[in-house]
Image (cartoon, rainbow, N blue to C red):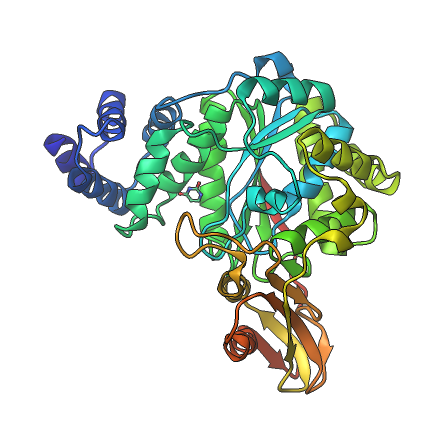
Length: 431
Ligand code: URA
């Protein structure tokens, strides 16, 4: 290990064998944290070329269980978001993509830090089973086109260990390390076609387009080298997506979009992601798939597919048919604007942190979540607001935090005399 660390410290290229030795040795406990941390820092400072990054990804992907989706043929599709605030697109895009013909056997994660996770959102639906056996995952996908489960305990265990170490050694923000972390899990999950939603902006990991583009290119290359079809869509995460942040609130918002009465941006981005999934899996033109995606919502077919999926996985669909059944938080805190003008910015990361503070997210892994906690944005970036007008409502069951939450929310908002320029929803597609 000493010579491997020294080689990378001196900016040299590591061989496949050296990378495999590190991943295997660290996963099985033979290599101590201090040596792994030194190598990760050397990678962070000196980078890795495409071949090294692919080898690192493959070694991590094969460090534990892998899922064989070959029975689904060319139609197996997956979608991954690099993490955002109010990002509930999986709940909407997946039923749409399934209506279009994709087969989606998907593993999703939980939220950590200021970003939410699909599994937490789904768990807010009474009865929804988040742990499926590999056999049930496959059977359900063949039957209805969708199955979505929490990540199996032994899927890419090397990533779990390496990620935890990166988190405490200031080695998270490195493109080869992020790309190999995300792609190792996607490769182990088995899908042939993978759409990556790479979020860009204040609420995302990648704060600017250039770094998001480099990350996207790196992941697309890894996919190509591993015989998977990968497309990365760079999307805006300067402001929260949609108007709800928080687990059950986001499920309710998703149901509304699927019923054709939700946020327009959320509908658009979900249809775009579903259309990319379908155009890759079915090898059909993207524009045609986009039209069909909107049609799937308009006709009610996507909503029907969502109901079938939730029911098949044990969820009580009475909650979906009547979203008033979701438990409400005991406190509704109004946030009133202190100035008159346009909302020129609404910091997504800060809104994510407020949601965590209200009880809707975890500060530490293992913390219990309050599914009813969250935020409803009454006003969005670009809206004109009068002093004293309600701009948001925060929901919580916690006591003694009303003033703090109001103050934090007001700090996340900028008011200006000028209407801000409209931001694009999608910056670019990398493939
Ligand atoms: N998401 C991951 O899974 N890994 C990273 O390193 C960053 C984001």
